[in-house]
Image (cartoon, rainbow, N blue to C red; front, side):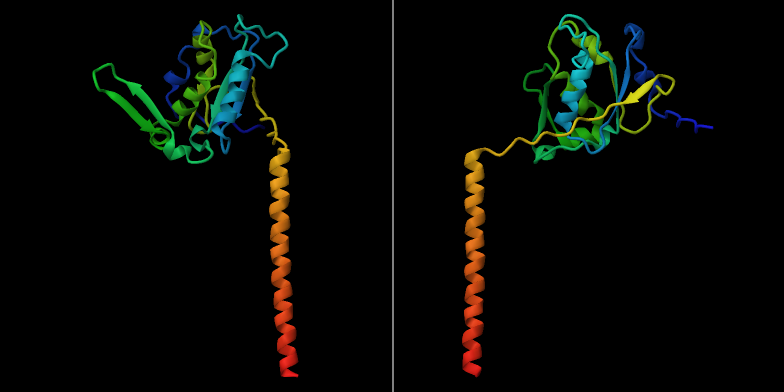
Length: 202
């Protein structure tokens, strides 16, 4: 007998908000695990699924994307020094009230908003954007209230590392040869010092 899924302990009203305005017929429920994933690379894959670009029936004026459930938003990772250097800005509307918040502080306050902003800023700014936003459900933990739906995990594609450019490759080879020459010279110097010491003692 299969174990029962864990009960959802989050804000159920917020998690189910707006589902009545979405036509769920024929949609797939894709589950993204954000644990250890790079923010930008994960957001780009979510944006592709939300727009339906992974389907042969894709059309830019038709909304046929799938539902996206993102789990473990609090365990997302970023490269470089973005955790302290990336800043979100917004204005309250009052004179001089330009607010800012660093990515580190936003992760402590609400990590789901970090992924939501990254995904929405990758979507086209048109009339379909609000419907695509409703299809995006993000949770900071590993629990979600959609266990009664036919969810399927999304497998992230392997990262394609670009081949090194010829100039950079030549520079790397020169640096390696230079380092090998230094190591050989140092070993030869040590060997000569040992031989000289042996001759003196003899």
